[in-house]
Length: 117
Image 1: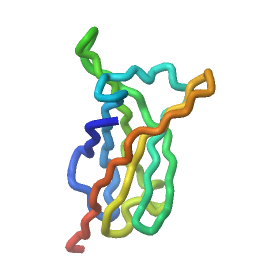
Image 2: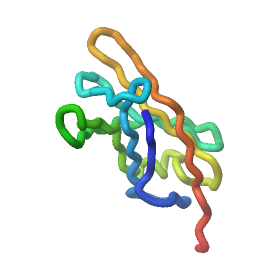
Image 3: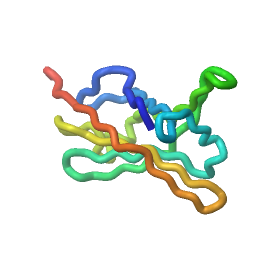
Image 4: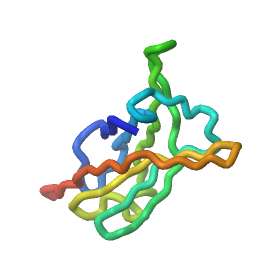
C-alpha cells in the first residue's frame, strides 16, 4: 500500500483524521474489492495495537483506476488509546480473501504532536 497519507497533521486527541492508502502490488494498482476483510492496523508508541475495519474506495477507470483503503478516526479510537500520546505511530493495511489468502501492506508511520491546551 503506497503512498499512504493522512488528511492533515495529527495531534493528541484528534478525531476525524482520515487515513488513505493507495493499494498496490509491486507498484501496480491492485483491486482488493473481492476481499472479505479489509482493515487498518494501528500501533501506538505504547505498543497498543488497534484493528479497525476500513473502506475500499476507488478513483479513475480502466488503466487509470486506483484503489484505496480508507479509515476515519472516531472518538472510540481515542478512548482505546489511539493518539493519546505524542510520538511515532504506525499503520498497516490488511486483507483477507474467500480463498484463504491473507495479505499485509507495507507499514507506514506518522507523528502525533502535542497541543497547547
